[in-house]
Image (cartoon, rainbow, N blue to C red):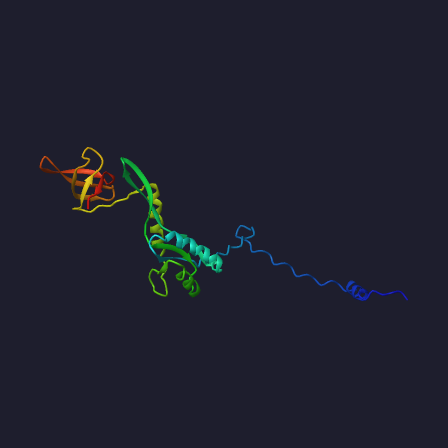
Length: 222
């Protein structure tokens, strides 16, 4: 007697029975013009917000580097977005030449984009040289969009038009370091921060004479 395939009857039975009808595939919804409508993209909600952390002054960059490396080591890098140390370009006059450099907008502070929770709050607060979060105590308050945009705008515009390194106030004593009145001293009579100029009362031939000067042309004497 010939060997029999144990699955042969199953195959024969299946072949003798009519195949079940397949359900028709649902047609894609059509747009008013008859074409298939494109599926709407699913937008992921951004759960990260900007916070400000307070650091020891002068250790802002070390804190930023440490926070990034700790996030990788302790597994919370997915909850950390951008880390920003706001800076601006400033210009000053040295030996008769304009010199541009960078300075911190807010010394002792670092902006961090985070998906905040209790675990992350402790991890950031325990980062070396971090003294805590700004505002909110144990429940830090994130920056508003307007606050973030204001900081970013100031940083961007300073790169295009560097600010004078020094600022002045009315009645402050200054010494002129550039121009025809170089080495004269006088009192600030008016300050125009929009134009970065000031009017200084300089004593010439015994009279107080107003002189219009650029911020870069004077230095503080006190």
